[in-house]
Image (cartoon, rainbow, N blue to C red; front, top):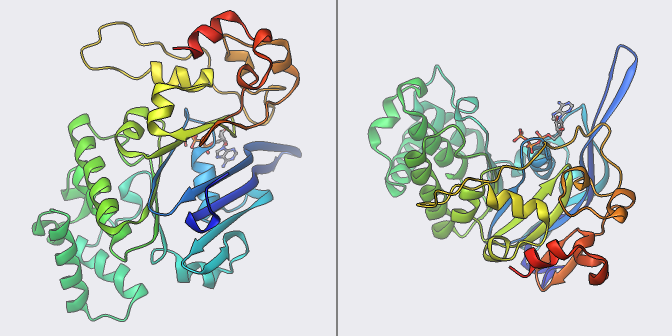
Length: 346
Ligand SMILES: Nc1ncnc2c1ncn2[C@@H]1O[C@H](COP(=O)(O)OP(=O)(O)OP(=O)(O)O)[C@@H](O)[C@H]1O
């Protein structure tokens, strides 16, 4: 799948993670991540895309080994490769997890208020955080924080503020600083710009980009916003209903998407100075306690063929570095609707 295993920092192999619940005697299984395999390369920005409810956050949670019941890993593995060390993330004890969390693997959660203590000043939050992982004096933690905020171009005055005194954008920047101050090799960011206005979003994207370029860490960005992926990601994985349906470098995803779902995601992006109406995707992702048969996208696909209702398409490498799960690509082309062939030809 990838050039060399050594170039990967995290590998996900045939991962199935389901929400298994029982309420009033009725068992329910939500197949939120269903047979996903992928490999993220050292030093890249890897985007995970798809509409709300497609399994992005669930996948991220398991990749972080931060899943808890009712979310259950029923199959598969997540492997971190740090330097020469190979770590099976899903077999770590809570102590081992605490050892690598933030120092090696960190995350920027959805909504910065979750990590910033509302009754602590920012400098105290940084101190608590740093001293939980390193033996440092209060003064050393403060100096470290000051230097890092300056490096990131954040004003020193935020140190004395409480979280509610900062704007949403500044809070998000502070959260990103907190998640990266210990130089983790791998950082996950869940919808890092959602709920921020467009100008502020741009600043946050810029900050994530600068940190990644400076520290050469690996950044995994989870968002439904294809505009953010276009600006930030080196490669993109598109999820639909718990499955990985397309993966390629960002340019290829935008120039030559092969899956009709990816095409829809791109068409629904607003374009500067383009006044034509945006195409929104008809329908919505299915409930994952009873997903559609065959290809889970077939009820919404304008090109669906009889086989799509019966069989799940395999994920194939359609060209070097481009993976897609769609019978329109893997079937004999004479069986494929003319309209799709026209679309695929651009
Ligand atoms: N605690 C839970 N119990 C049962 N089902 C859940 C739970 N959390 C999420 N799900 C379901 O799992 C599926 C995947 O959800 P997930 O949050 O991973 O998607 P997502 O793509 O990250 O969307 P969003 O951006 O809205 O979080 C959805 O069908 C969702 O309804």
